[in-house]
Length: 102
Image (cartoon, rainbow, N blue to C red; front, side):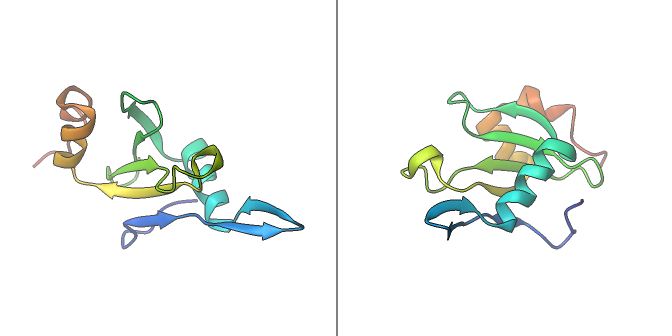
């Protein structure tokens, strides 16, 4: 399971199934990507937001929970970050060695 080059945002949703809220197929895909494909390289000070690197194209992906007011933080979202955005939030030390060659 990989991320296509044209993807920059992958947002899960909660759906009702048999009277309960469960993650949709996109939530399942995000979980599969962070468990078996993307490489975690850092976390923000809160521990909730995580930074990942795609081993195929070196793009950086941030795992966040944009509906954090919901129970359990809400459904997950992966969004592609520039190296500059990642350095600002996660620190230069994490991303400096990961930058692809110019």
